[in-house]
Image (cartoon, rainbow, N blue to C red; front, side):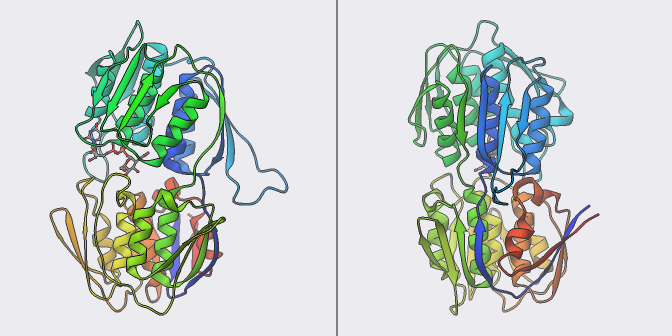
Length: 429
Ligand code: UD1
């Protein structure tokens, strides 16, 4: 299993290209199941989760073609993926595949909408607390699907197709909103989704569906209205930049000091996180080329932050902010409201010398003068990158074990940081 070795203490200077968003790529690839025509996606990141979803789509009989790098292409250029679900040969998504990545459960929506049936394994446990799918199932039922749970599988049936309806989410759910929008796109009649997620990835997927012929309005607001159509066509769509990757590197720069241009990043996708970084003492400038983040001289100021659905501070940057706060001049509080038990990184950060105490969903972080390198273990995607951020500022050497978590969501992390002066290397095997 690969590990990453980091020797801390170097500021970051230079440019980091921001990849296409993982959390948009996955639902966009899943949306390809809605049509028998070809969907072409540009700016797709090279990530383990993308490869895993490709396997799942292949299992349904979908043709996924990834273009190779052409001479003259920049190293950071995203992939172009051509996906053709001309024939769906199997409407079952088996446990072995779904259990590796929760978002793959979302295939249930296009499968039942287009094929009238789907048999999809329930995703099972997850390192960041129970992550149920009850609201996804509720949404499909509101559109007329009959759903039974048997042998660990959700079996959805709508032999005469789905019909539009009103879906009111009692809490904001990104996955629930993706599922509802995809299913409603092919349902007969009008669907109104209330309390929809407003995350930029929802808007990106809706934009792509509209290019495919779907009739969707209000994506990016709390109410989305969909007029169902009988079939969708192919389209070409470029994945929006990854706001979580952007925020992660922005926090890394705030941690180490230095000055980095996050190329291709869009400030409006993570304004709340950038506002926090300004409070922390970083300088953030949106330019035509991306977002420039710098910190020099001044220390790291403590902050109090609560995670919220978009446009609030994202839960996917909570661990990274906590790493940054370990070196603040004073005491910070971070409250997690989206996921229970998303504090797996606390114990590992403590191994580097961080002082963090937990009270329910709130972490109190007492900033320390120095962190010291140590072997640590990655536990989930965002937690593992928080260890990288802490290690970049720790004295001496840190080895992050189980980096396959990082590879799920961060493309060429060690190269991107290494280019900016970090002492970071991958140790294979
Ligand atoms: C997505 C993101 C993930 C991010 C999360 C919140 C992808 C691939 N993943 O995950 O990176 O951290 O949004 O921004 O885009 N819930 C229920 N019942 C359900 C569904 C969700 O109670 O049926 C709860 C969850 O337990 C959680 C909250 O709703 O407390 C939000 O979860 P949700 O937005 O659905 O997260 P995901 O879509 O799984």
